[in-house]
Length: 136
Image (cartoon, rainbow, N blue to C red; front, side, top):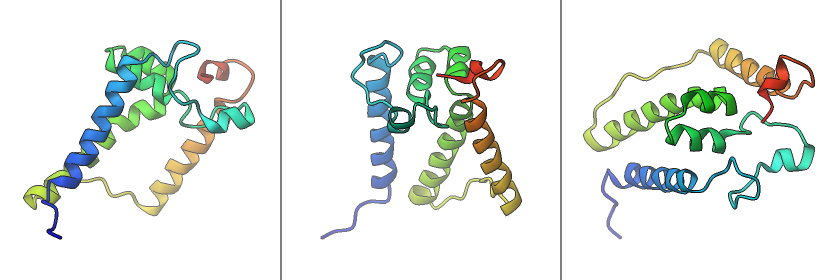
């Protein structure tokens, strides 16, 4: 079997991401009874996981509502440009052999990011203000 061209994997990832964006952009996950999958963690525990609200965030972001996107999941919104850059850097390396600058996190920075992620998870499940604003 012949090897796939260098652009095949980045193109497949882009196609999958664009397909998901099309589904989320057309379907409205902000409406009750929508057909998009719900968070299994929230279904089992009743708690918001760090990713809860990401699909709704993507929907309103695709419709140009940045404030609404931040309300659904600020952490996921912050990850959008990071993921786009990571895909772009990976594609440039695979296709053109060009290395774009990437952000290398030290172990201390990784621990800090994990701590922020855990604190966000706890904070969005606290039952009093101002944390109730993080519920989705």
